Length: 131
Image 1 (cartoon, rainbow, N blue to C red):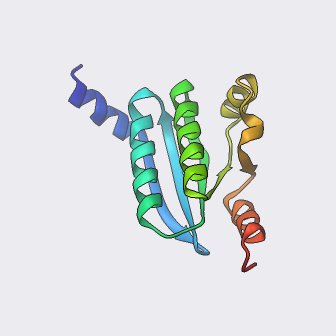
Image 2 (cartoon, rainbow, N blue to C red):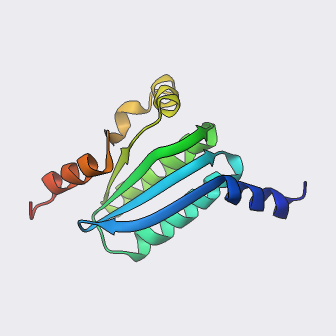
């Protein structure tokens, strides 16, 4: 399989949708997050977050059916990007497989995590000076 076909197949197995809810950027990832699709997540979320004024990003991972170590790398990249920008990143709907990976790697405690998008937005509003 050539590189173009591999990227096309990755896009078919993975989707990212991004929108705003209550003034917060919410990105929903679904499908298989692996080596090929991780770059798609990093690029799409990074572009929207950089272009859209918001103090926070909620990354809803409840739709993931698979994630490998590359997924963790993208999450660490997004966390670093959030710190560099002075913004908040909250993961929601963390699949148990990913939570175990973060625990084993000693990274679980560095991420803010909420059970749902609504609860993550409530956390953001609680952190906001206007709230």
